[in-house]
Amino acid sequence: MAELVLTKHRGVKDIERIDVYEQFGGYEALTKALKEMQPAEVTDMVIKSNLRGRGGAGFPAGRKWSFLPKDPALDKHLLCNADEGTPGAFNNRLLMEFNPHQLIEGCIITSYAIGARYSFILVRGEYELARKRLEAAVEEAYAKNYLGQNIMGSAYSLDLLVQRGAGSYEVGEETALIECMEGSRGQPRQRPPFPAIKGLYQKPTVVNNVETICNVPHIVKNGAEWFLGIGAPNCPGTKVFSISGNVKNPENYEAPMGTTFRELIELAGGMQDAAHPLKALMLGAEPPILPASLQDTPADVDSVAKVGSALGAGAMIVLDDRQCIIDMTLRATEFFAHESCGKCTPCREGCPWMAKILERIEHGLGRMEDIDLLADICANIAGKSLCALGEFATGPVASSVKYFREDYERHIAGYACRLPKELAEVGA
Ligand SMILES: Cc1cc2nc3c(=O)[nH]c(=O)nc-3n(C[C@H](O)[C@H](O)[C@H](O)COP(=O)(O)O)c2cc1C
Ligand code: SF4
Image 1 (tube, protein in one colour):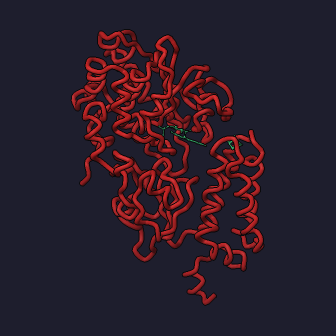
Image 2: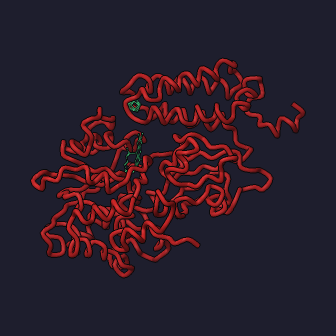
Image 3: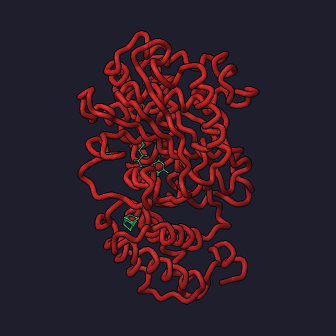
């Protein structure tokens, strides 16, 4: 059994309470950082550990922190991205609900490293329990002087605010998150300037994902070498995978980065029904769909990118041969059409257009030329939109056309929603 890091104390009664968290070594990393390390040393340690962002892009966290201006007179902010909106991802929710102090300790250490005086956690609007637990934990942390003026007698002071989002996938995009935090409509900003230069309230800002920040206390406590010893060579540590769909035990599972998708399915109890083998994997709604033939790919940022998809937020929707790829692609595309903020034309117009075409194919009303039309629309959205949502919307469409063209052709030929096996059964 691989070493658990972030979910090690899952199941410990009342771990969300500060006294219980402390009994299990909680806030020891903060004590070490404040008493034994300079902020730059914390950043250096995280750079050495090669902690890659868990929010989707896999950007090295320590390097991101190092982009902030060093001037101590300048206000800086940490904004923790707890907006988790990717379909099929529910790992941030688990981390916040079962052990909110792990995240808060990570936020305090990260804020210390970057020199932030004020920090923020923007929590997805629907995550009521997570927000309540975080707010209660923040109150406890103030009472123990892990937050507030001169933390634990040091020269460092920090205030941390938990803010409820309004419930939107697009708000997870870092500049939209900043807009939302400022009270504006959650739409992306033009970049540059990047948040590291002008972010929240026009101040240099680091935006990091919940799981990224939860790793920080463990790295500070155990060292960069320890972290580098877990997971994949270029993508160390563990990942909490949200595994759902046609597996026996859908749940969150923590596993070392680089565990193969086949092994992750086994971790979730195996396929739901042995008579129905794996057809495809959706790593959320946005990354390109992977066919079953790629299930031995190691689940880490670079290995998944190498086979043309993306690890994303760690969602893994397992589809067996009873599932219709066109239907799944349609659902993902409808999601993007709904979530598109409408600020730029290719995404605003292209997403609903693709959904409309997929819907007619799904209902047996498609035309053969629709397949190339979909590919053409994808080419006109990707790389031509203001934020990555446009690009994301093309992931399931382009990949399903690439790997499952036959399914499209069958639907269009009049066998809508009939999978090859079922067609064979009725002699089609
Ligand atoms: C449409 C869209 C939605 C996103 N949603 C999230 C999200 O829910 N949570 C998240 O951490 N990052 C999300 N991101 C990525 C963020 O923009 C940002 O890269 C991330 O929070 C950085 O954190 P990390 O470096 O720790 O991974 C999203 C990006 C896009 C384009
Ligand atoms: S790509 Fe879509 S979500 Fe992003 S700014 Fe443009 S319209 Fe809005």
